[in-house]
Image (tube, rainbow, N blue to C red; front, side, top):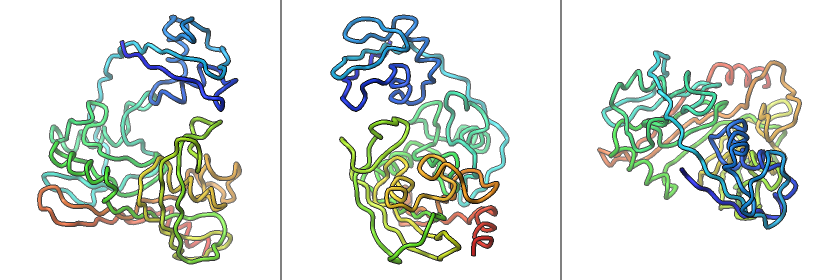
Length: 304
């Protein structure tokens, strides 16, 4: 049984313990957390508590996570938009509304299910049965270039490059409003939001450095078409950075306005346009580009 411990900070007080643990324990549903609470597997200051317990500052929370059965992830014949492929790598243009890897509630229809069918047994196993070949990911509603590793050697190479932020990643986005400057850099720290634990925020306690270059490509009606270059890879970095300066990504339901000004738009207009890195076998620098999806191109014409 895996045991986890949390010291409750002042900003976490008055939260229900089931809500707090759901946000802290990524990959576990609220119902699973509540089941653990009811089974006495969660204690606060060495005493078992109910799901509605309200946290207090300096509480010491202990959670025993029972071993879960590994789900049987199946290969599925789902079409892939392949940008490039060789014996080491597969680079795909991920469509909108596709989850990258299986997780509770999403054990089929993911990119991993599709890649398992396409690559058969030729996938790295470093990240386990739920994430074969996956070395990085993009959000469900973000489209664009994503690298799949076919063997452990390529996986380690890409992971090392990600760790030192040497991979070149450029995104395209449509954002609210117009900018005073055509090119600039956003540099902050990014960490877990102090109140809403499912969100990230700038300049919060225990945040990590985050740097994004922004270049305006075209001014649209009430919006701007921009390119963002990542120098770091924090969770939701582009979305959080742009929202923090008053220019959230159009369609972003988490960091943007509650009501989307464009009718029938589902999800954010954010696209991973280019990825560049040192190829694990050749040692040469390579770049791969993912064409904008049709909905994005149509929206640009509509807003021009």
